[in-house]
Length: 309
Image (cartoon, rainbow, N blue to C red):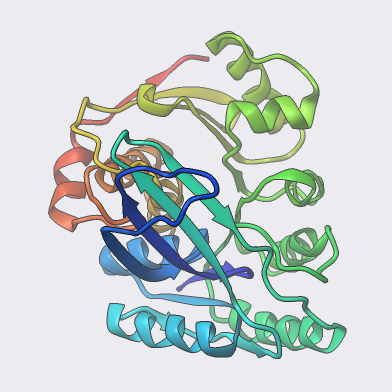
């Protein structure tokens, strides 16, 4: 079973508008409300691919009820901890010029008692899981090393832990040596304080991540694919050209593909191919964190994996 942790879920509100003018009354031409959060995208894609998967984290208030009901509609198994605070909303305003403006709420404040309730839930679910994924930001009130604690517990159980977050949570999480990370070049610059100007710089950092004990580091290069490391080797992942509709959620879909590949016991080349196929398939859809299984199967055979070192 794949256990997916989404601590800071959201109701994603997407507004389509002709333009966005500060200080004016604006009217949306179209509105969508969907369950959001990087982990929920991961769980949705893993579920679409037919894997046994369960999502956990925190949900609160009417927004949390909305998310729970929608996940049932999507067929996603869930076991969340209910909290006193209200689950956040995140707004994406998409204008006719193609620009997307996002407004992200911080999320509820999690009490000490709610932290302990989640840890108890995590211990219970971890015992049943074979792969663990934690994606996204953390709500207020959680210590910055919260992911690191979860990683340590998974390592004690010999369960691979895939971490996809940013900022201090990523830095402290990396210190616990998760199985997988997926920083982009901007995040590497922030972490390392060094410039990333070429693929050679990316390769250097991938090798450094492996030397620090991270088994499978992956760095996205956007439309050019990714560079990954595994077992002291470095791989370039090249994806086919597509008509991109919406790249949001492609990174989450990549993580889902990696988790599914691990669950299925695939080779590292096939794991990376499945991740890239899921990420690319997501970009071909209007909906974030969504793929079509037949498209993933088709793309899987079109992903090129080249060993660089």
